Image (cartoon, rainbow, N blue to C red):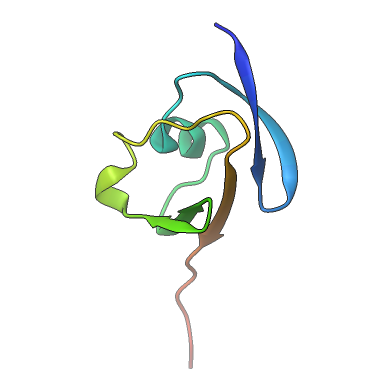
Length: 69
C-alpha cells in the first residue's frame, strides 16, 4: 500500500494511505487517554476508528497524565 506524509506534533511522519486515527495511535504505541486534533479540529475518541487520515494532515496528539498531590 502507498504511503502518505502527515505531521504529528511538528514532526513529519510516514503512514500507510487509508489509515485511521486508531491505526496511527497503535503504530506509534500511543495508548491510554489521548487527545487528538487534526487540522485544528478535535477528533473525539469515539471517531478514532472511523476517521481516515489524508496526505498532509497536521495532527497534535497529547497524552493525558493523571496525578497530583
